[in-house]
Length: 417
Ligand SMILES: *Cc1c(COP(=O)(O)O)cnc(C)c1O
Image 1 (tube, rainbow, N blue to C red):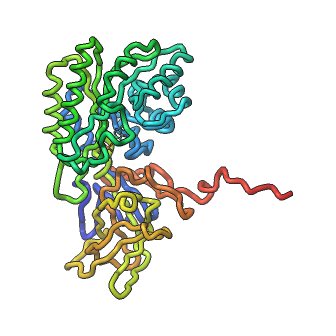
Image 2 (spheres, helix red, strand yellow):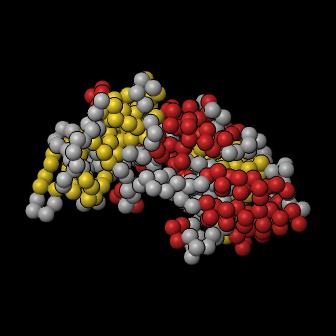
Image 3 (cartoon, rainbow, N blue to C red):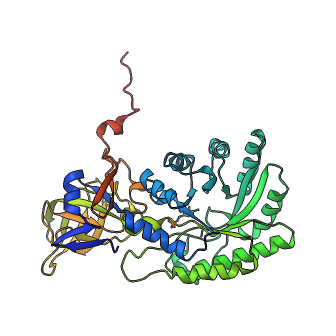
């Protein structure tokens, strides 16, 4: 992240000293750069003409202040639950700028979204389409709908997205799609608006994206032949973030490719759903070293952040760069495992790192802005971290650290007889 740099031997985010933030707000602490979030947003905006929509995928980082910031900059939102719709509304967003994805929407979620007037349901199965028709009929309204198609992008050419294929639970298989579109077109309480796809996450090459886009435009052509006209095409998110510092996605090439494909459809609105690419590199997790533990063949750095705070390393062996907050002089000698306090062998933040730190030092885990706090849990009865947003030398506490009382709220002892 360009907003992270050492000044006078101390790691800063924008003009905020991370040691000072740790002192003020405690650790573990998530810190996000407002300037970086907006720079990431503007990068998409620059390549995407203004008649096309950018829907921020709320699940990447759903803090109200971040949703507020993006709403103020014209964002639409992609949500995957009724709870996320409530967040968007609480942050000042508008329901009519929300698209609702997710494979197992409940009847209550569908009703709530219809009552609030969302822009579109991204429907993931034929059964869901029928359920939305029923709920809309009961409410005497029409539900705006897009059908999510699984374009089955070839795994052989793109093994890194091998989960985004026919076999997965998301979307309607492309070979079944025509039949479901025909059905949607005939239903009285469905307003068929669009088609969408989302082929996976953390994708670093534009090739699979372009493959999927071509298949989606093919589908539009076939629909047109049957006089089924769509007003939008939503190509989802999944834009990779450069965690390891050596590869970047050629976003401009991809977006230009899509705009070229859309050339024959001047009335078609295009949509994207970036999540990680907007917030991933805009956040760090600050943690304090509690102890150093040496055994015969290993050295552990035991820190106060664990898998409950940042789950990605444990869940997907994700690699996050870890750096000391006090700038190192000289070369790190030892190789260490950076591990957290949770009682699981899988609770680690980084294996086999060159990192010279001592007890009470602070470390920064980089690229922690996406799927960090939103995946945090209270496992081991640990409170979730505080979150801070910074800009220049200002810092706003945007979520208080939880308290023990927050954790046990709603729990009940059984009454004594
Ligand atoms: C998660 C998700 C996104 C965002 O994915 P990123 O990899 O964070 O860009 C977009 N669309 C849908 C349907 C999703 O489920």
